[in-house]
Image 1 (cartoon, rainbow, N blue to C red):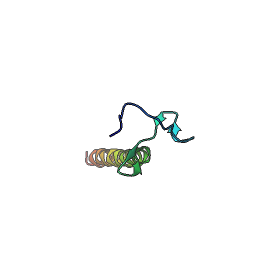
Image 2 (tube, helix red, strand yellow; image 1 turned 180 degrees about the vertical axis):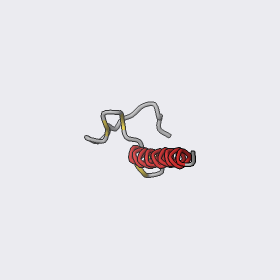
Image 3 (cartoon, rainbow, N blue to C red; image 1 turned 30 degrees about the vertical axis):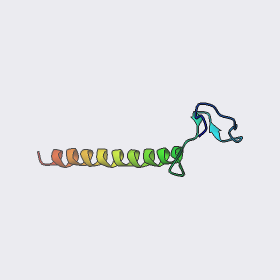
Image 4 (cartoon, rainbow, N blue to C red; image 1 turned 135 degrees about the vertical axis):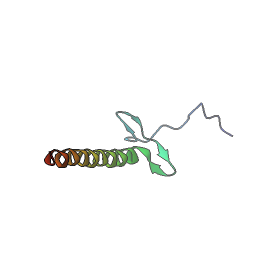
Length: 63
């Protein structure tokens, strides 16, 4: 078994990003999955905030 602390192969050109090396997780690029999760969470937070604002608007009408 090879020593994991030493590397003999260099990564392919363009395989790394400015933020660091790209990582693989179960054969899929982890960086891409993070961006998809970020979009989903952002949309969910905006929908939740809109619902809270709607509750305040409806509550203020019943005074």
